[in-house]
Amino acid sequence: MAITRDKLRVIAIEEHYYDRELAALFTGLDGKTGGKLREKLEDLGELRLKEMDEAGVDVQVLSHGAPATQKLDGATAVRVARAVNDRLHQTCKARPDRFAAFAVLPTADPRAAADELARTVNELGFKGAMIHGLTGGEHFIDDARFWPIFERAQQLDVPLYLHPAIPHPAVIDTYLKPYHERFPGLLNAGWGFTIETATAGIRMVLSGVFEKYPNLKIILGHLGETLPYLLWRIDHALSRPGNAPVAFRDTFSRHFYVTTSGFFSDPAMLCCIQELGIDRILFAIDWPFVDSSKLGTQWMERIMLSAEDKAKVLHGNAARLLRM
Image (cartoon, rainbow, N blue to C red):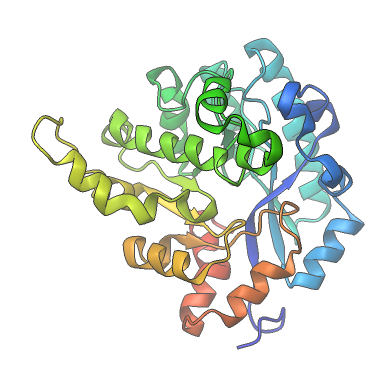
């Protein structure tokens, strides 16, 4: 089955951009993020649309690149997040046929973040929000201080996308040093991103937040940050005597969705299907952090799935979850 715009709609839901005001506030290792891709990240017009057309992508759900607003202080984050979201809204408003959006949230001020989520969904038509790594570089999002955000997401019936950022400096020093100097990819997609975001996903299940908010929906990129592969083992380990009661595998499978962003592997995809079911897998490319947008759609064209299942991954599941 050839994937063409005539035959099958394609919605890609982890596609990044940079807002110049926000990106100018990145410091340290974060200030190097993007690198040679900066021109693509800042483009919300001709260049981006050209690559979308070449890959057969109909709609990108736009999200700011890491660490977005997560490392800003509360007052700055509130001000900047509102301005960034308003500008992104103008982009989507100009091309509603090609672009939708996830909001940035000022998580350093959780109640303001909840209010900004509501504003962007109710007034700007955003599809949810993306949260990048540790707030303030220190705090995982499962902490009870952030639960007003989850409460509001449940009320609005929108998902929150947990996206990686560069790990905590202590993790870099202990786990990745000295190899990250010769292999900087270890800091991000090579391993560091997985360490941080898989840990965030595990902590979410253990925190009890899903018992408090039983309709909360969480998205993880990169085919679930290894967690689908590990679900049985984690669940088995936590079921042993001495652990507090937790239905880890069942809870994860009920509340989490995963995307294909930057991870176009047949075995990994089949593992996710077997653990979570086809209805919880959504298509994403991770533009522009892959060599070519075509990698994702070409992979979906050849992978051994039925036409019905391909349609679910490429657009049906996103249309249902994000009401598109």
